[in-house]
Image (tube, rainbow, N blue to C red):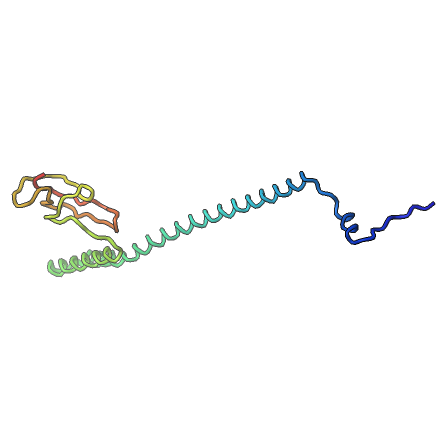
Length: 169
């Protein structure tokens, strides 16, 4: 007798024979592997984002510093010219220094740097550094009487405190 092969009679029977049964454990392992792969990809994307952001931040910082120094170079050039011009008279030399000072002040203003600390201002320990005090009826209580060094700020950040003498403290 010959053995006859059974042939599937319906399409459904064909599918059942073609697809081997997958156990629940294998399905769960496959899902776990997919989620693990997804997790690793997200971690790699985050790491790349962090590195790219750090590089962009460093580039912006370097670029902004270069821009400020680029603005300051003409002042340095003018100081070089003034220093090399030994034959200039006192009046011409003084006028040149005043022009350089004005140029430097304009650059500070352009970059958002403001000076503070004038005689008559109210003393504020957050922005003033009191190195002396004096009793003087011409000034009110806790008033700046004399400024030894102006203070400077960039926006809300104090770059340097004003060094002052305070009256009636």
